Image (cartoon, rainbow, N blue to C red; front, side, top):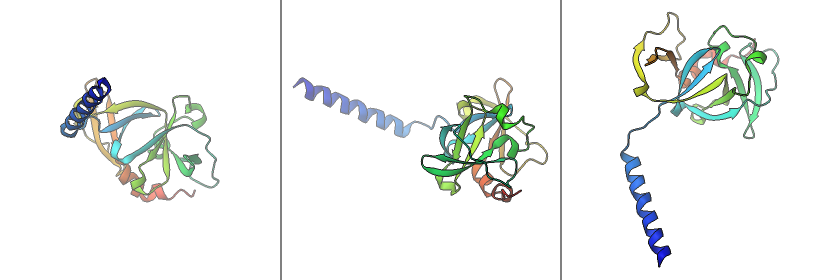
Length: 175
């Protein structure tokens, strides 16, 4: 009898939590990352999985930002150095890769088997964490969405991964 009562209470708690979750606003909108000292925001709905920086096999005759391919969850993914792709001054990849480095894959819905090399994860961010919107730099790539300033005064650049994947430069990896 006690087990039935405990099971009933568990089911009631679960039902209450599901109801509360259905009406609660979304809490996080972006994955915050750092690449070559710059802060970037990757929309969660456009981001895929996060992987440890695994072995990347170089592909000859490609652009410097295309690092090669890696086997991630049994599938080959092209690995792109986010900092170099966005033309940020960056030290050599070998110098930047550390135990904190990660590969962030693009969401499968974008139709591109690619992962971005980032120097480190900085957590999740939501709109409440930002104080203002700043102007994008002159000549910014089309994938630059909003430029946000947090309450500490740090500037964060949102990257629209769907726009990035659609850029002709992103698809043209041949050197």
